[in-house]
Length: 445
Image 1 (cartoon, rainbow, N blue to C red):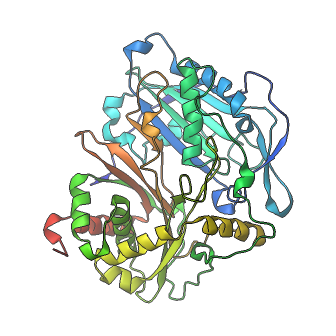
Image 2: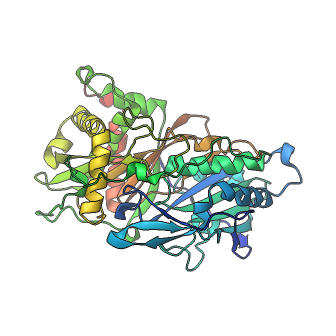
C-alpha cells in the first residue's frame, strides 16, 4: 500500500525569467482578507502536473505555450504579478507592481513510463522539477508564483508550480490555471472572470470571537510525548486507498452512526493510525482539523470568480487512550463533529480571532490537519495536451496531509494520502493501516 520508489533523473534548466502581464494593469494596493493573511497560510505550497504526448500538439513547445498563455492570463489576474507588503497589525496587502511571476523551462532525461506510479506525491526528485530560485521563497517582496515546465524524453512534460498560500487556496489556484489553459487553447477571455472582494471574509467591525477554536488553543505537552516535528527529521511516503481498502474501512463503522462518507472513514483511519504509531501517553489529548471550504455553503454566498482562501479548519479534541482503544466509529464521530462546526458564524469568528490576536499560528503540539482535495478538479487542467496523468499538490508537511484522487498503474481509481513521519513512527503507521484495511479484521457486522 505504501509507495516509495527509487527514482533518479537529471534536469537541464534555463535561466529563470519574469513573466509579466501582456498589457498594462492597475497599480494599486489590494488588501488580503482576514482569512488569507493568517500566520498558518504564510508559506509556499507546491503543485505538480504530469502530461503525456499528444499528436494534436506536434511541433508545439509546452513551455512556450504555457508561458505565453500565462502572460495573457495575468492581465486578468494582475495581483499575482505583484508583491506582498505588510501593514499595521500584520495586515498583508498586494502591491500590484506588474513585475510578474517567475518562470523556468527545462529538459529531463526521463520518461513517464519510467516514472510510473512515482508521479503521485511525494513526487521523486521534485527539487529538480521545481527549481527553488534563490531569494524567491519569501512571503514579503517576492514573486507570488513560480512555474517550471520540464520537457521529457517521451515528449510529455511536467508543469510544477509554487504558490504563496496567502493569495489563494486550491480552488483559487485551479481557477487561475483553468484561465491559463483556456487561453493556451485559443480563448481570448477566461470563462470565469476573477473577483477580488477579499473584504467579504474580513472580521466584523468591531471583531468578536463567538466560537471556540481548538485549533488555536495553546497546548501543554504534560507527558513529554506530543513532541513537535519538523520536516527535516521525517520520511515522506504515500498510501493508496482503492475501492477494496475504502470498503474495508466502512465495514468497521456501526450503522447507528448513519451514512459515512469516504472522507470521514479515511480521515478517522489516518488520524487513529497516526496517533497509535506515535505511542502517545494515553492520558494526553490530541487534535484533528479537517479543512472545510465555505464555497457553496448556505449563508456564505461567495461571488463567482472569488479566488482567495475560502476555508477554515475546525478542530476536535480526543483523549489518546479513548481514540486508540475504541473502534474506528469513535474517530468517525469526531470527524463528523469537526465538519458540523463549519458555518458562516464560525468563519466570521475565525476572522475576528485573527484580528484580535494578531493573526496567530495554529497550535502545533499534538495537532494534525487533513486537507481534502478530492473535489478539486486538478485532473481536468488541459493546456492542449489532454488531461494530466496526475495533477495536484506535490507533497505533505509534518503536520498537514491531504487526500487526492489518483488512478494507479493497474487502472484502479482511489485516493492517495501522502504523509510525513519519523521513520520508526512511519513503520508503525504502515502496519496499523494494513491492519485497519484487512477485510478479515472487521470489527462490526
